[in-house]
Image 1 (cartoon, rainbow over the protein chains, first blue to last red):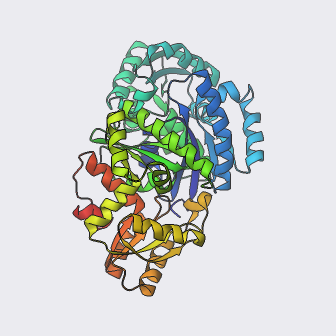
Image 2 (image 1 turned 135 degrees about the vertical axis):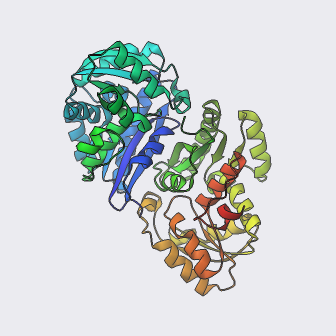
Length: 239
Length: 239
Protein backbone atom coordinates (compact mmCIF):
# COMPACT_ATOMS: atom_id res chain seq x y z
CA UNK A 1 0.00 0.00 0.00
CA UNK A 2 1.08 3.57 -0.53
CA UNK A 3 0.77 4.49 3.16
CA UNK A 4 3.29 1.94 4.41
CA UNK A 5 4.81 4.31 6.98
CA UNK A 6 1.68 6.08 8.19
CA UNK A 7 -1.91 6.70 7.14
CA UNK A 8 -3.23 10.00 8.48
CA UNK A 9 -7.00 10.23 8.97
CA UNK A 10 -8.40 13.75 8.66
CA UNK A 11 -12.00 14.92 8.79
CA UNK A 12 -12.03 18.01 6.63
CA UNK A 13 -14.75 20.56 7.47
CA UNK A 14 -15.38 22.06 3.99
CA UNK A 15 -17.80 20.02 1.87
CA UNK A 16 -15.36 20.66 -0.96
CA UNK A 17 -11.77 20.14 0.09
CA UNK A 18 -9.02 21.39 -2.16
CA UNK A 19 -6.04 23.05 -0.54
CA UNK A 20 -5.51 20.71 2.42
CA UNK A 21 -4.75 17.63 0.31
CA UNK A 22 -2.61 19.67 -2.10
CA UNK A 23 -0.42 21.03 0.72
CA UNK A 24 -0.38 17.65 2.49
CA UNK A 25 1.20 16.00 -0.53
CA UNK A 26 3.70 18.84 -0.96
CA UNK A 27 4.90 18.19 2.60
CA UNK A 28 4.46 14.43 3.13
CA UNK A 29 7.43 12.07 3.04
CA UNK A 30 7.08 8.99 0.80
CA UNK A 31 5.03 6.27 2.48
CA UNK A 32 2.70 8.68 4.28
CA UNK A 33 -0.86 9.03 2.97
CA UNK A 34 -3.92 11.08 3.79
CA UNK A 35 -7.24 9.36 4.53
CA UNK A 36 -9.80 12.07 3.97
CA UNK A 37 -13.49 12.45 4.76
CA UNK A 38 -15.11 15.74 3.82
CA UNK A 39 -17.74 17.13 6.17
CA UNK A 40 -20.69 19.46 5.55
CA UNK A 41 -19.54 23.08 5.75
CA UNK A 42 -20.45 25.45 2.96
CA UNK A 43 -21.70 28.42 5.03
CA UNK A 44 -20.70 27.45 8.61
CA UNK A 45 -24.32 27.52 9.85
CA UNK A 46 -25.09 25.92 13.21
CA UNK A 47 -26.85 23.03 11.42
CA UNK A 48 -23.76 22.42 9.30
CA UNK A 49 -21.44 22.57 12.33
CA UNK A 50 -23.64 20.14 14.29
CA UNK A 51 -23.94 17.76 11.36
CA UNK A 52 -20.18 17.94 10.77
CA UNK A 53 -19.44 16.96 14.34
CA UNK A 54 -21.59 13.82 14.00
CA UNK A 55 -19.97 13.05 10.64
CA UNK A 56 -16.50 13.46 12.23
CA UNK A 57 -17.18 10.89 14.92
CA UNK A 58 -18.58 8.39 12.42
CA UNK A 59 -15.64 8.95 10.05
CA UNK A 60 -13.11 8.53 12.89
CA UNK A 61 -14.55 5.09 13.68
CA UNK A 62 -14.47 4.04 10.01
CA UNK A 63 -10.94 5.38 9.56
CA UNK A 64 -9.76 3.32 12.53
CA UNK A 65 -11.39 0.21 11.04
CA UNK A 66 -9.80 0.99 7.69
CA UNK A 67 -6.31 1.08 9.20
CA UNK A 68 -5.58 4.73 9.94
CA UNK A 69 -2.52 5.29 12.12
CA UNK A 70 -4.32 8.15 13.84
CA UNK A 71 -7.28 10.46 13.27
CA UNK A 72 -7.29 14.26 13.29
CA UNK A 73 -10.68 15.92 13.72
CA UNK A 74 -10.58 19.15 11.74
CA UNK A 75 -12.23 22.49 12.45
CA UNK A 76 -11.69 24.71 15.50
CA UNK A 77 -15.38 25.70 15.68
CA UNK A 78 -16.38 22.03 15.56
CA UNK A 79 -13.83 21.01 18.22
CA UNK A 80 -14.54 23.94 20.50
CA UNK A 81 -18.32 23.82 20.35
CA UNK A 82 -18.69 20.06 20.61
CA UNK A 83 -15.54 18.69 22.14
CA UNK A 84 -16.46 20.10 25.55
CA UNK A 85 -14.31 22.47 27.54
CA UNK A 86 -11.78 19.72 28.26
CA UNK A 87 -10.57 18.79 24.79
CA UNK A 88 -7.81 16.55 26.14
CA UNK A 89 -10.36 14.37 27.95
CA UNK A 90 -12.55 14.31 24.82
CA UNK A 91 -9.58 13.18 22.73
CA UNK A 92 -8.68 10.50 25.24
CA UNK A 93 -12.23 9.14 25.33
CA UNK A 94 -12.43 9.13 21.53
CA UNK A 95 -9.05 7.41 21.21
CA UNK A 96 -10.14 4.64 23.58
CA UNK A 97 -13.48 4.36 21.81
CA UNK A 98 -12.13 4.02 18.26
CA UNK A 99 -8.86 2.26 19.04
CA UNK A 100 -6.35 4.65 17.44
CA UNK A 101 -5.07 8.03 18.65
CA UNK A 102 -7.65 10.75 17.97
CA UNK A 103 -6.71 14.40 18.27
CA UNK A 104 -8.09 17.75 17.14
CA UNK A 105 -6.86 20.65 15.06
CA UNK A 106 -7.28 22.87 18.14
CA UNK A 107 -4.82 20.76 20.13
CA UNK A 108 -2.43 20.63 17.18
CA UNK A 109 -2.32 24.42 16.90
CA UNK A 110 -1.98 24.97 20.64
CA UNK A 111 0.95 22.55 20.84
CA UNK A 112 2.58 24.12 17.81
CA UNK A 113 2.43 27.64 19.28
CA UNK A 114 3.84 26.38 22.59
CA UNK A 115 6.79 24.67 20.95
CA UNK A 116 7.52 27.69 18.79
CA UNK A 117 7.70 29.80 21.98
CA UNK A 118 4.97 32.12 20.71
CA UNK A 119 3.49 34.79 22.97
CA UNK A 120 2.03 37.56 20.81
CA UNK A 121 0.23 36.17 17.80
CA UNK A 122 -1.05 38.10 14.78
CA UNK A 123 -3.51 36.27 12.53
CA UNK A 124 -4.16 36.39 8.80
CA UNK A 125 -7.19 34.39 7.74
CA UNK A 126 -9.07 33.82 4.49
CA UNK A 127 -12.59 34.69 5.64
CA UNK A 128 -14.55 37.94 5.79
CA UNK A 129 -13.42 40.58 8.29
CA UNK A 130 -16.52 39.82 10.36
CA UNK A 131 -14.50 36.79 11.52
CA UNK A 132 -11.61 38.84 12.95
CA UNK A 133 -12.99 38.72 16.50
CA UNK A 134 -13.56 34.97 16.30
CA UNK A 135 -9.98 34.50 15.11
CA UNK A 136 -8.64 36.59 17.98
CA UNK A 137 -10.76 34.61 20.44
CA UNK A 138 -9.24 31.41 19.01
CA UNK A 139 -5.76 32.72 19.79
CA UNK A 140 -6.85 33.50 23.36
CA UNK A 141 -8.45 30.05 23.62
CA UNK A 142 -5.13 28.52 22.53
CA UNK A 143 -3.57 30.38 25.51
CA UNK A 144 -1.76 33.21 23.70
CA UNK A 145 -2.14 36.96 23.32
CA UNK A 146 -3.84 38.09 20.09
CA UNK A 147 -2.27 41.22 18.60
CA UNK A 148 -4.33 41.82 15.48
CA UNK A 149 -6.13 39.97 12.74
CA UNK A 150 -6.47 40.60 9.02
CA UNK A 151 -8.96 39.04 6.63
CA UNK A 152 -8.68 38.06 2.96
CA UNK A 153 -12.45 38.53 2.64
CA UNK A 154 -13.37 35.23 1.00
CA UNK A 155 -16.24 32.98 2.00
CA UNK A 156 -16.04 29.23 2.65
CA UNK A 157 -16.72 28.35 -0.98
CA UNK A 158 -14.02 30.75 -2.14
CA UNK A 159 -11.15 29.34 -0.07
CA UNK A 160 -9.47 27.62 -3.00
CA UNK A 161 -9.61 30.86 -5.02
CA UNK A 162 -7.57 33.01 -2.60
CA UNK A 163 -4.63 34.35 -4.65
CA UNK A 164 -1.26 32.81 -3.82
CA UNK A 165 0.33 36.16 -2.93
CA UNK A 166 -2.33 37.00 -0.31
CA UNK A 167 -0.71 35.19 2.64
CA UNK A 168 2.63 36.98 2.22
CA UNK A 169 1.03 40.37 1.58
CA UNK A 170 -1.14 40.16 4.70
CA UNK A 171 1.71 38.82 6.84
CA UNK A 172 3.84 41.84 5.87
CA UNK A 173 0.98 44.20 6.66
CA UNK A 174 0.29 42.55 10.02
CA UNK A 175 3.92 42.72 11.10
CA UNK A 176 4.16 46.37 10.03
CA UNK A 177 1.00 47.25 11.98
CA UNK A 178 1.89 45.08 14.99
CA UNK A 179 5.68 45.04 15.29
CA UNK A 180 5.39 43.38 18.71
CA UNK A 181 4.00 40.18 17.12
CA UNK A 182 6.45 37.30 17.51
CA UNK A 183 4.29 34.88 15.50
CA UNK A 184 2.15 35.05 12.40
CA UNK A 185 -0.72 32.59 12.39
CA UNK A 186 -2.36 31.69 9.10
CA UNK A 187 -5.80 30.68 10.38
CA UNK A 188 -7.77 27.96 8.49
CA UNK A 189 -6.21 24.93 6.83
CA UNK A 190 -7.91 25.51 3.49
CA UNK A 191 -6.22 28.40 1.67
CA UNK A 192 -2.84 28.72 -0.01
CA UNK A 193 -0.21 29.30 2.69
CA UNK A 194 2.37 26.47 2.66
CA UNK A 195 4.43 28.02 -0.14
CA UNK A 196 5.22 31.17 1.91
CA UNK A 197 5.95 29.83 5.40
CA UNK A 198 9.73 29.92 5.08
CA UNK A 199 9.73 33.30 3.38
CA UNK A 200 7.54 34.92 6.05
CA UNK A 201 9.76 33.56 8.82
CA UNK A 202 12.96 34.72 7.13
CA UNK A 203 11.78 38.10 5.94
CA UNK A 204 9.78 39.22 9.00
CA UNK A 205 11.85 37.61 11.78
CA UNK A 206 8.82 35.81 13.24
CA UNK A 207 7.67 32.25 13.75
CA UNK A 208 4.87 31.08 11.50
CA UNK A 209 2.14 28.64 12.38
CA UNK A 210 -0.42 27.82 9.70
CA UNK A 211 -3.38 25.68 10.65
CA UNK A 212 -2.59 23.19 7.89
CA UNK A 213 1.10 22.94 8.86
CA UNK A 214 0.25 22.44 12.56
CA UNK A 215 -2.35 19.78 11.78
CA UNK A 216 0.04 17.97 9.44
CA UNK A 217 2.92 18.21 11.93
CA UNK A 218 0.92 16.98 14.94
CA UNK A 219 -0.66 14.16 12.93
CA UNK A 220 2.70 13.03 11.64
CA UNK A 221 4.40 13.06 15.03
CA UNK A 222 1.42 11.30 16.65
CA UNK A 223 1.76 8.60 13.99
CA UNK A 224 5.44 8.20 14.92
CA UNK A 225 6.95 9.89 11.84
CA UNK A 226 9.79 11.97 13.25
CA UNK A 227 11.39 13.10 9.94
CA UNK A 228 12.45 16.73 10.06
CA UNK A 229 10.87 18.32 6.98
CA UNK A 230 12.50 21.36 5.36
CA UNK A 231 10.74 24.09 3.38
CA UNK A 232 7.64 24.67 5.50
CA UNK A 233 8.70 26.64 8.55
CA UNK A 234 10.52 26.00 11.83
CA UNK A 235 7.76 23.80 13.18
CA UNK A 236 8.34 20.97 10.70
CA UNK A 237 12.08 21.54 10.49
CA UNK A 238 12.90 21.67 14.21
CA UNK A 239 10.21 19.84 16.23
CA UNK B 1 -4.52 30.10 -6.04
CA UNK B 2 -2.84 26.74 -6.47
CA UNK B 3 -5.27 25.60 -9.19
CA UNK B 4 -4.47 28.41 -11.62
CA UNK B 5 -4.56 26.14 -14.68
CA UNK B 6 -7.50 23.89 -13.75
CA UNK B 7 -9.49 22.82 -10.72
CA UNK B 8 -10.90 19.33 -11.05
CA UNK B 9 -14.02 18.56 -9.02
CA UNK B 10 -14.50 14.90 -8.11
CA UNK B 11 -17.21 13.25 -6.04
CA UNK B 12 -15.44 10.32 -4.44
CA UNK B 13 -17.71 7.34 -3.66
CA UNK B 14 -15.81 5.94 -0.63
CA UNK B 15 -16.54 7.80 2.59
CA UNK B 16 -12.79 7.70 3.19
CA UNK B 17 -10.72 8.85 0.21
CA UNK B 18 -7.08 7.83 0.26
CA UNK B 19 -5.64 6.50 -2.97
CA UNK B 20 -7.42 8.80 -5.45
CA UNK B 21 -5.94 12.09 -4.16
CA UNK B 22 -2.53 10.42 -3.74
CA UNK B 23 -2.43 9.23 -7.35
CA UNK B 24 -3.98 12.50 -8.60
CA UNK B 25 -1.09 14.51 -7.18
CA UNK B 26 1.47 12.05 -8.55
CA UNK B 27 0.08 12.68 -12.04
CA UNK B 28 -1.11 16.29 -11.98
CA UNK B 29 0.93 19.02 -13.67
CA UNK B 30 1.68 22.10 -11.58
CA UNK B 31 -1.31 24.42 -11.38
CA UNK B 32 -3.91 21.64 -11.47
CA UNK B 33 -5.76 20.87 -8.23
CA UNK B 34 -8.35 18.40 -7.00
CA UNK B 35 -11.58 19.61 -5.40
CA UNK B 36 -12.96 16.57 -3.63
CA UNK B 37 -16.18 15.69 -1.84
CA UNK B 38 -16.37 12.25 -0.27
CA UNK B 39 -19.66 10.37 -0.53
CA UNK B 40 -21.23 7.67 1.64
CA UNK B 41 -19.95 4.27 0.53
CA UNK B 42 -18.52 1.90 3.11
CA UNK B 43 -20.39 -1.29 2.16
CA UNK B 44 -21.98 -0.41 -1.22
CA UNK B 45 -25.54 -1.01 0.03
CA UNK B 46 -28.46 0.27 -2.06
CA UNK B 47 -29.14 2.87 0.61
CA UNK B 48 -25.55 4.13 0.44
CA UNK B 49 -25.68 4.26 -3.37
CA UNK B 50 -28.94 6.23 -3.37
CA UNK B 51 -27.60 8.66 -0.77
CA UNK B 52 -24.32 9.02 -2.68
CA UNK B 53 -26.12 9.90 -5.90
CA UNK B 54 -27.99 12.73 -4.19
CA UNK B 55 -24.78 13.89 -2.51
CA UNK B 56 -23.01 13.87 -5.91
CA UNK B 57 -25.53 16.19 -7.50
CA UNK B 58 -25.41 18.62 -4.58
CA UNK B 59 -21.61 18.55 -4.58
CA UNK B 60 -21.42 19.17 -8.36
CA UNK B 61 -23.54 22.30 -7.93
CA UNK B 62 -21.39 23.49 -5.03
CA UNK B 63 -18.18 22.76 -6.94
CA UNK B 64 -19.42 24.87 -9.84
CA UNK B 65 -20.17 27.75 -7.47
CA UNK B 66 -16.71 27.35 -5.92
CA UNK B 67 -14.97 27.71 -9.28
CA UNK B 68 -14.34 24.15 -10.47
CA UNK B 69 -13.30 23.82 -14.12
CA UNK B 70 -15.13 20.51 -14.40
CA UNK B 71 -16.91 18.08 -12.05
CA UNK B 72 -16.57 14.31 -12.34
CA UNK B 73 -19.21 12.14 -10.70
CA UNK B 74 -17.37 9.08 -9.45
CA UNK B 75 -18.57 5.51 -9.12
CA UNK B 76 -19.81 3.28 -11.92
CA UNK B 77 -22.54 1.74 -9.75
CA UNK B 78 -23.76 5.21 -8.78
CA UNK B 79 -23.60 6.45 -12.38
CA UNK B 80 -25.30 3.40 -13.85
CA UNK B 81 -28.03 2.92 -11.30
CA UNK B 82 -29.05 6.56 -11.28
CA UNK B 83 -27.69 8.21 -14.39
CA UNK B 84 -30.20 6.53 -16.73
CA UNK B 85 -29.37 4.52 -19.84
CA UNK B 86 -27.75 7.27 -21.88
CA UNK B 87 -25.16 8.75 -19.59
CA UNK B 88 -24.03 11.28 -22.20
CA UNK B 89 -27.48 12.82 -22.19
CA UNK B 90 -27.44 12.82 -18.38
CA UNK B 91 -24.02 14.51 -18.39
CA UNK B 92 -25.20 17.11 -20.87
CA UNK B 93 -28.33 17.98 -18.88
CA UNK B 94 -26.39 18.24 -15.65
CA UNK B 95 -23.67 20.38 -17.28
CA UNK B 96 -26.30 22.84 -18.45
CA UNK B 97 -27.92 22.80 -15.05
CA UNK B 98 -24.78 23.51 -12.99
CA UNK B 99 -22.94 25.67 -15.53
CA UNK B 100 -19.68 23.72 -15.93
CA UNK B 101 -18.90 20.45 -17.75
CA UNK B 102 -20.06 17.48 -15.67
CA UNK B 103 -18.58 14.08 -16.48
CA UNK B 104 -19.03 10.58 -15.15
CA UNK B 105 -16.38 7.99 -14.42
CA UNK B 106 -18.30 5.54 -16.63
CA UNK B 107 -18.09 7.70 -19.75
CA UNK B 108 -14.45 8.54 -18.97
CA UNK B 109 -13.56 4.85 -18.99
CA UNK B 110 -15.57 4.10 -22.13
CA UNK B 111 -13.84 6.93 -23.96
CA UNK B 112 -10.42 5.78 -22.73
CA UNK B 113 -10.97 2.21 -23.97
CA UNK B 114 -12.17 3.51 -27.33
CA UNK B 115 -9.08 5.67 -27.82
CA UNK B 116 -6.75 2.87 -26.74
CA UNK B 117 -8.36 0.68 -29.42
CA UNK B 118 -9.27 -1.94 -26.83
CA UNK B 119 -11.41 -4.92 -27.80
CA UNK B 120 -10.71 -7.78 -25.39
CA UNK B 121 -10.40 -6.51 -21.86
CA UNK B 122 -9.19 -8.46 -18.82
CA UNK B 123 -10.08 -6.91 -15.46
CA UNK B 124 -8.28 -6.87 -12.14
CA UNK B 125 -10.27 -5.34 -9.30
CA UNK B 126 -9.66 -4.88 -5.59
CA UNK B 127 -12.95 -6.31 -4.28
CA UNK B 128 -14.11 -9.79 -3.33
CA UNK B 129 -14.44 -12.36 -6.13
CA UNK B 130 -18.25 -12.30 -5.97
CA UNK B 131 -17.90 -8.96 -7.81
CA UNK B 132 -16.30 -10.66 -10.84
CA UNK B 133 -19.57 -11.02 -12.77
CA UNK B 134 -20.44 -7.36 -12.12
CA UNK B 135 -17.05 -6.32 -13.52
CA UNK B 136 -17.54 -8.49 -16.62
CA UNK B 137 -20.92 -6.83 -17.21
CA UNK B 138 -19.27 -3.46 -16.82
CA UNK B 139 -16.76 -4.21 -19.58
CA UNK B 140 -19.68 -4.98 -21.93
CA UNK B 141 -21.33 -1.72 -20.89
CA UNK B 142 -18.05 0.02 -21.70
CA UNK B 143 -18.30 -1.39 -25.23
CA UNK B 144 -15.70 -4.19 -25.08
CA UNK B 145 -15.53 -7.95 -24.72
CA UNK B 146 -14.68 -9.19 -21.21
CA UNK B 147 -11.71 -11.52 -21.25
CA UNK B 148 -11.29 -12.72 -17.67
CA UNK B 149 -11.58 -11.11 -14.26
CA UNK B 150 -9.57 -11.55 -11.11
CA UNK B 151 -10.14 -10.12 -7.62
CA UNK B 152 -7.79 -8.93 -4.86
CA UNK B 153 -10.40 -9.91 -2.26
CA UNK B 154 -10.52 -6.71 -0.20
CA UNK B 155 -13.64 -4.99 1.04
CA UNK B 156 -14.47 -1.32 0.69
CA UNK B 157 -12.76 -0.23 3.90
CA UNK B 158 -9.66 -2.19 2.93
CA UNK B 159 -9.01 -0.49 -0.41
CA UNK B 160 -6.12 1.60 0.88
CA UNK B 161 -4.48 -1.51 2.35
CA UNK B 162 -4.14 -3.47 -0.89
CA UNK B 163 -0.41 -4.27 -1.24
CA UNK B 164 1.43 -2.31 -3.91
CA UNK B 165 2.59 -5.44 -5.75
CA UNK B 166 -0.96 -6.77 -6.19
CA UNK B 167 -1.81 -4.90 -9.41
CA UNK B 168 1.27 -6.17 -11.25
CA UNK B 169 1.03 -9.71 -9.89
CA UNK B 170 -2.61 -10.10 -10.88
CA UNK B 171 -2.09 -8.43 -14.25
CA UNK B 172 0.60 -11.01 -15.05
CA UNK B 173 -1.72 -13.80 -13.95
CA UNK B 174 -4.69 -12.63 -15.95
CA UNK B 175 -2.64 -12.13 -19.11
CA UNK B 176 -1.13 -15.62 -18.72
CA UNK B 177 -4.61 -17.10 -18.30
CA UNK B 178 -6.14 -14.97 -21.08
CA UNK B 179 -3.47 -14.37 -23.71
CA UNK B 180 -6.11 -12.97 -26.10
CA UNK B 181 -6.57 -9.91 -23.88
CA UNK B 182 -5.31 -6.72 -25.57
CA UNK B 183 -6.05 -4.54 -22.54
CA UNK B 184 -5.76 -4.92 -18.80
CA UNK B 185 -8.29 -2.86 -16.89
CA UNK B 186 -7.37 -2.09 -13.27
CA UNK B 187 -10.87 -1.33 -12.04
CA UNK B 188 -11.85 0.99 -9.18
CA UNK B 189 -10.12 4.30 -8.64
CA UNK B 190 -9.27 3.61 -5.01
CA UNK B 191 -6.44 1.10 -4.79
CA UNK B 192 -2.75 1.33 -5.64
CA UNK B 193 -2.36 0.98 -9.42
CA UNK B 194 -0.74 4.13 -10.88
CA UNK B 195 2.82 2.99 -10.09
CA UNK B 196 2.35 -0.26 -12.07
CA UNK B 197 0.75 1.01 -15.29
CA UNK B 198 3.91 1.53 -17.37
CA UNK B 199 5.48 -1.76 -16.32
CA UNK B 200 2.35 -3.74 -17.19
CA UNK B 201 2.11 -2.14 -20.63
CA UNK B 202 5.79 -2.79 -21.37
CA UNK B 203 6.10 -6.25 -19.89
CA UNK B 204 2.77 -7.75 -21.04
CA UNK B 205 2.45 -5.84 -24.31
CA UNK B 206 -1.08 -4.67 -23.59
CA UNK B 207 -2.81 -1.35 -23.10
CA UNK B 208 -3.69 -0.48 -19.53
CA UNK B 209 -6.71 1.51 -18.44
CA UNK B 210 -7.15 2.13 -14.74
CA UNK B 211 -10.31 3.79 -13.47
CA UNK B 212 -8.30 6.47 -11.70
CA UNK B 213 -6.12 7.18 -14.76
CA UNK B 214 -9.15 7.40 -17.09
CA UNK B 215 -11.04 9.73 -14.74
CA UNK B 216 -7.98 11.95 -14.33
CA UNK B 217 -7.32 11.96 -18.08
CA UNK B 218 -10.90 12.75 -19.10
CA UNK B 219 -11.16 15.47 -16.47
CA UNK B 220 -7.95 17.31 -17.35
CA UNK B 221 -8.58 17.11 -21.10
CA UNK B 222 -12.12 18.45 -20.60
CA UNK B 223 -10.64 21.25 -18.51
CA UNK B 224 -8.38 22.16 -21.44
CA UNK B 225 -5.12 20.75 -20.07
CA UNK B 226 -3.53 19.13 -23.10
CA UNK B 227 -0.13 18.28 -21.54
CA UNK B 228 1.11 14.83 -22.48
CA UNK B 229 1.97 13.18 -19.15
CA UNK B 230 4.65 10.50 -19.06
CA UNK B 231 4.91 7.64 -16.56
CA UNK B 232 1.29 6.52 -16.33
CA UNK B 233 0.53 4.64 -19.51
CA UNK B 234 -0.31 5.31 -23.16
CA UNK B 235 -3.57 7.03 -22.32
CA UNK B 236 -1.94 10.01 -20.62
CA UNK B 237 1.13 9.99 -22.84
CA UNK B 238 -0.56 9.78 -26.25
CA UNK B 239 -4.12 11.13 -26.01
